[in-house]
Amino acid sequence: MGIFDFLTKLRDRSGQSCANEIRPRDELWEAVNLVVKLSHPNIYYVSNYRKKLMPAVEHTLKYADELIVQMPPPVSIEADSWNTNSFVRTTFLDKNTFNNFFSEHKALKEFFQKTNASRCCALLVMNRKDKKIFGTEIDGEILKRDVLQTSIDFSDHQIVAPMISEEETRKELSLRALALLATHSLEDILSLIERKKDLETEKHILEIKLNMRDARVRSRESFLPDKSDNTGKTSEAHEMLGELDRKIAEARLALDEPEDYLNRVTELLYHPEQFLRSEPVRILVNDMNIIVKNEHQGKADEIRFSEFSTGTGLRKAAVLVDYKR
Image: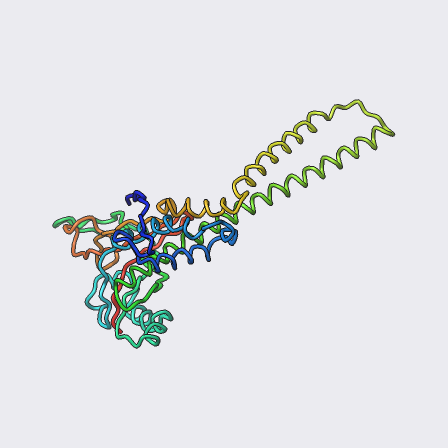
């Protein structure tokens, strides 16, 4: 996935959007407000925080738009898709599972109740699991046995962002990617705050231990003097205190002013590819959900989807679906 160059957009004094903006001005402001809402409240204390966030928000939306644009066209889902669509047969265990999922999914039911529409576009998100197995394989006219193969399995299906049109779904998904990054920036900030507290607690405990040690030494020396030398351990403890002081100072410096909180957020929004990535997947799968290398290994169907991953290790298979109830 390419990394987008950031170009600051010039805006006219009337506040209208320039032709090269990726969103109308009012939508961009709503996106900025979303980021602020999901980030740390100290950002509110920064002068002109919304204006300072705007370029970073635009940058992330552009990146998210590109991820969504690169997804395959929506898979058409209808009542008989289990019998006619190879992707559906590959991603759902059986026909009943397929039918129950789309007829009973909460997000879909709420969408149709609210809109009274006959169809919608949404993102189907799944866990993908590959498993190594031994099986038979046809290579031309030769039948090979005990061949190491890879089976593919999809589970934990979820529907995300059902909308009237594909365009609305893609735009909503970009906003949700922005929200994901804003939430992660908050988690990053909170982890820094927690680390500083942990360091301060560790320092406090070490200081207590040192004071108790000094008190024991003084009380012993006042009654039963001993020539044993404990300066080495004491020196080591003071070195640890010095190191803790250094780390605490670094942690405080990272989040010293409200502007620092804003900078943590914008840093991630300017580099969204460091946390959120996507790659296209195209594989040939036979009727047994075995991945085959080429068409000479028997009848197989090509399935296409995107695989999203985050910096926290989360990985999901995803595809747009055009669902007709």
